[in-house]
Length: 391
Image 1 (cartoon, rainbow, N blue to C red):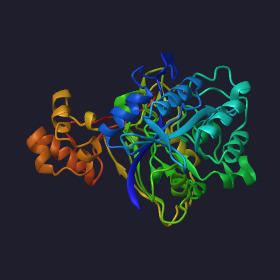
Image 2 (image 1 turned 120 degrees about the horizontal axis):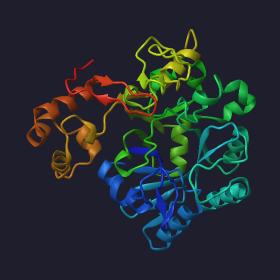
Image 3 (image 1 turned 90 degrees about the horizontal axis):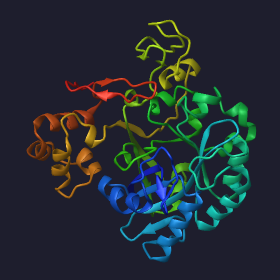
Image 4 (image 1 turned 60 degrees about the vertical axis):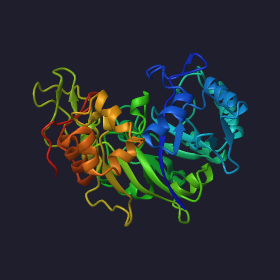
């Protein structure tokens, strides 16, 4: 068995000189993700959720032909630097929520594309609206031996619980049993998710949903698997055998841009007792419902979390630690350590020598608990307070 770090939700900005994710950086290319940023961050496995794009799949085939990638018999693609690429496609179903389908190989990816070809407007672009329902996509993913995962489930923007339903089980009936994993999203954590009884059925993922290279790995998962392959990832997410999710690492939910309810009329992020559905400043009901507020609204009176749930570690990306500018960031990385190694394993004394005692104290405090955060909402990310204290 081995322990690996995985970020399983990364977008592509451009492929073959064509735009894929319009809102993503053009620097977000397959080669930059696999060969530049994944090693820099310390990731062993990455999933590109725009592999269903014709432009992206064509670029994958070029990398295979050039020997930079090779197919793994148990699924997934191995880069010559050791990083494993998982093929995935994020799409929007008729119900208006985002769903990720992780697929084992190029054959299943091409079958996926054939099925969607007549059901989307443009198969080159990312996260297209598909003329299929939630259950239809779930069954298609199952038939292709994939892993089905509702994305950023609590967000007001296309999240299953945030934008569609209070509970999945009555919506899906018997098909509910086929959903084994959900993605938390940047504004939620394990403990918030477990306020709903039905989430005890799911494994939980914390992924970056990166739209730029620096944001890759801002959330990630620590997995225990026999080998780095799709089959072992699938067993891990299902909890089969000794494969398992050891821990989730992610932003403090208060740093998420949809954490609390937001009033666009007076530009106010609420700090009132949740749930907040009307602005306490101007009285407007034109509210963007926050993730925390939504969960407080639909939570069970007596939640029943599973007996064993991987621990959620609150983390801030290295570049967002107060006091870490470009020079300090480069000095820390010049040691040859990855970002994850610096944040998780580098001794405090070594950090202090390279970056100063204040930065070392902040990183050590973060490892031990939660930093003080000015909460985000309404599309604005929260920030770490400079004068932090540990909770």
